[in-house]
Image 1: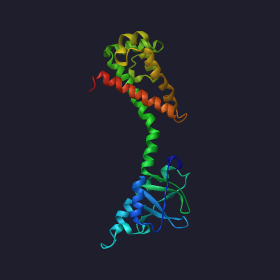
Image 2: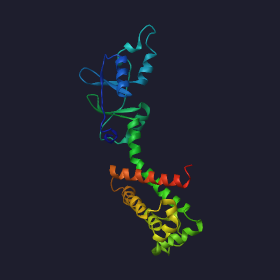
Image 3: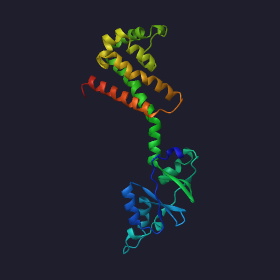
Image 4: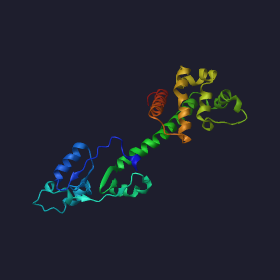
Length: 250
């Protein structure tokens, strides 16, 4: 669970007896969706949330101000989880409560919300999404740069050692093989420069680093670094720009 906690998490609690109005002001000011409620000794007794306030306010007398009610009358229970616990163990609690408290009643360490889970999943899957965009974008631009009947000959020119693999299509090639076909000097000069631009060495320098990143990611060797992620974003953006130029900005 600890991997879901943002590095810069600013966790705050409120004590029993705090008014709902004060807690709501703090939540709005800090952008929080919930505040753990603790005793004077620091023991967590529940969580004050927008949902628990809405639910509890229904039972406050009309002549009373719900904003003056103590938060401990307007709390809900949230599940606790250990830092070492697997994310899959608490998905149901996250879905039901919107958050999970890390630690226990006497030692609250962090809070994990559905937003934290979404961020975690996006960070883990984003390299795959970018690589997919790149691996689809390169052959798409290549295909649009020449006639369909020319593809087989261009593949043979770029991969002469693979001529025994007859009937190869662009979608059958690895990214490294695609770049060999794309950057074959004569093929690039006659056809592919129309989609990728006239500077063949710039195309090589832009696309080649993706091969190592792709191999590391798909073989689970290590996580993609920040610099590598920036490369993927840059290459995907560069390809989208080439597609827009090809399509006339449509």
